[in-house]
Image (cartoon, rainbow, N blue to C red; front, side):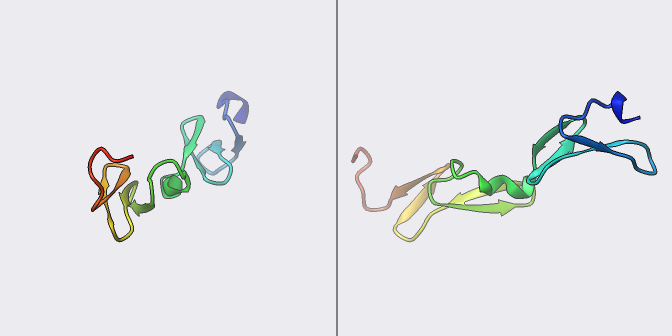
Length: 83
């Protein structure tokens, strides 16, 4: 039964038939494994400073003295074009 699914990681039998499963930090999406939503902040490249989980997404924030602008943190008292 599992041979027909072509799961990218692995397959296991269940009462409803064969199911794909994935390794740690991933979850099945059809036959493929994708990053689990609760693991999104595990990617250090998403936010400059702080990554906060929000249900199935995330929000970036910054430490005191900085303000968030999208995924970046900008110094509050730093001129716009400063290096």
